[in-house]
Length: 249
Image: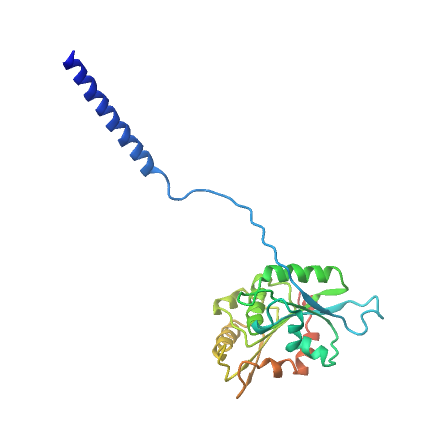
């Protein structure tokens, strides 16, 4: 009986060892790459100014261009009045009249980049609910907003009729993703210490080498606030008004 009991114990031990080895092999064969899926929802609250030309109400049949203006980092936050410090919003406050609508949203995040998908959704909503010529949607931005303008030109290549970027920055490989039908005007101060002029020079050189229509204005002796001179350039707004995607199709 003792011998039989010893044999059973040995068999039991061997069985347990075999079971452990099998489980180990199964665990080791589990793949590192698995299939999964998750639906995400991202919400963004955007405050904005919307400017209407003087004749918008008087001429009910007329379709108008619209300019999307993206401000710099200094105007980010939750105080919409900060947008009046620079660019077209400041000019409007100072009495400037524009021949197109101007949409000026505010980036609610002081230390984050623009949410360009949220901006695009806002822009589409404004366009759908106003008399806007969809072939004459213009884009401009300064500093951080200039970088966002480059990004939007990449993400939505057939949306804009023209773009003006003031002291912005963007990865040079973005150049090949921008629609060649869209004219571009770039402005930058040669003494910019925040965003080096080389950021614009490299992008402009790449675009020109690929046959894009690009204007480049450099300001000698001017630092990061090149937007002061850029947005006072009357020729810029005449240039915008000449651009129409419908004429380029």
